Figure 1: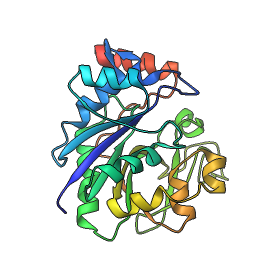
Figure 2 (figure 1 turned 180 degrees about the horizontal axis):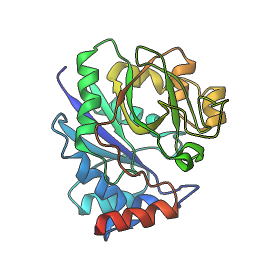
Figure 3 (figure 1 turned 60 degrees about the horizontal axis):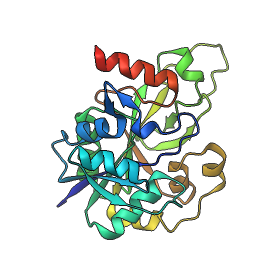
Figure 4 (figure 1 turned 90 degrees about the vertical axis):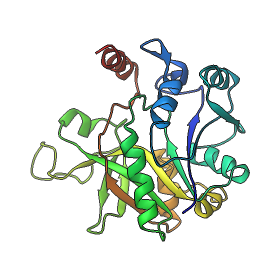
Length: 243
């Protein structure tokens, strides 16, 4: 493998937290914090922000970051990155979602490592254990079930697997950590795939790949961090930044 590029997709609109890419955390726009953390990953050759919004682009450029302007019509972050992939060649692309202001560089490196170790992989992502019942029930926290070889069987906003014997979090329950690795040729193909029924139902872009027969390798997060989905998460992020 010759090159790995991180692309951080960012849009201004957000159903749960409008304008969250520019929400201040410790006085710094969230997208800038994500960019700063991503740059610390040792396995990357380049870090780009992909956006259709000049306000986001301006904040990133003011901090010294590199921006690729994209179309506003993309249904998902992966589609936005696929547009970038048509212009910026690489062997592996890493999607670091723009709501992870404390993303551990080691997690990004873990995704690149598995893509390097298993050249047949089209796509990989991260998971972390769920130990809290509120997180287990929270539709903003995506859950994963995997097979014995570490490939995803399904992603859902609902608690999966269903625990028939009680209300506790099932042993081994996993949540998704929103960092993806893509092989370059797969990413170009993904952009041409039609969104499937499951993707449209759950609003989870990774299900498109699975619906079209692609496997997703899931590896353990090294240091799972706070993802900012709601105003309450933003408050917690500011407390963490101040801490």
